[in-house]
Each structure stands twice: as structure tokens, then as C-alpha cells.
Image (cartoon, rainbow, N blue to C red; front, side, top):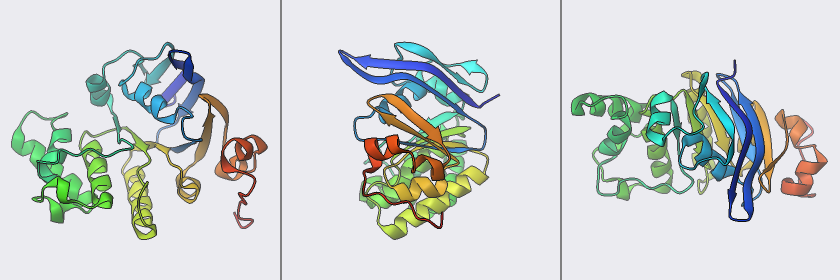
Length: 244
């Protein structure tokens, strides 16, 4: 059985159908990429999976349990965590306490939560900033902080919404390595990303959304040669490296 099974998921806002009859399965241990133009419905899809918005119809089954109409806090407890496209740390709190907020998902004891937070900060290589106020972090550090806060909830499935937006090439490579480490630790990932080099490097499979509709899904090397994907998202100037 797939870790995540989505069938017929649909969400409209007034006359706009943001997600239309979306279906997806994700197996345990996979990294699935999700691409598409701005406004395609990608973040709305993540909002539906994580419970921040309610689907008009369709089902979301996670680890064998229907979570379609479950509240976000309960979805987190079941093992789904997410990052957001625009990072919003608690600016007047330290880096350590920001991550401890996520750890409180599993513990009601302050010292236990802070201990878990410190271990996660070491994992994302941000422990040297643990006593710094989060508002003083760089963009790259805030992105890692967002990851750390999500990881502190002990997710089985991690939804990443443009985790590498705004990063320079070195920071991007470091984040790619970190995501591979997260997968190696046993976490499954569903990733929205606009940087094609990133999505091609990391993904086992890629799904493409356009106007809320899933165009196709497949291995990276096949998806980027699909004429529908080129027309809707990549553009005619996109050339896939022959060595791949």
C-alpha cells in the first residue's frame, strides 16, 4: 500500500478551480517532484494534504487512514509535516526555541522538546546558531530553520514548498545534500520546486500541474521530453542534457 494515496481531489475558489480531479500515489521512501507554472495549484494541493484547506471532493489516504477532513494538528500527529513557500519564523524567539515549537508536537515537556530541537539543529547544521534570534538569520539559514521545525515533528512524509527559492548555487547544493540525508533517515518527500536542475536531480518521479489539472507523471528523463510539459511549463527553449 502506498504511504499517500490521493484520488479525485478537487478544490475551487469561487469560479476558479485551483485543483481539478488530482490523483497521486507516493510510496514510502520516494521523493516525488511537483512542477508547474505559477498559479497551477501546487501550493493549494499542499494545503489540502496538510489540512489547511478543505477539499470540495476527493479523498486523501495517508498510511492507510482517510485524512481528507482531518484538522492540521491531527495530520501533523499522524506524520505529515510541511514547509511554506514564504518562511515565517517566530522572529522574537531563538533558533532553538523555534524548532522546539515543532518538537512540542510529540512532547509536552520543555526540556525534552529542546533536546529534540537541538538534535535536529545539529542534523541541519544550524546548531551553531541555536541561541541567535531567528530574525537575524540569512535567507538560507531561515530555510534550514523551516526544515528543522518540520523535522522536529518526526514526519513520515515531508512536503517541501520551494525550499530552495532565493538560494545561491552553493546553498542550493547544500540543501540538495540535506534533502538526500532526510530521505536516507527514512522520511518520504513531496517537493514543489521551480529549479529544474534540483527537481531532476532529486526526484524519483515528477508530476506536472497546469490550471489545477495533472498533465502527466513519470520519471524525470521522460517528463522533460513530453511535448505537453514543454508547452505548458518548460518552454521550447528548454533542452534536456543528452548525457542524462
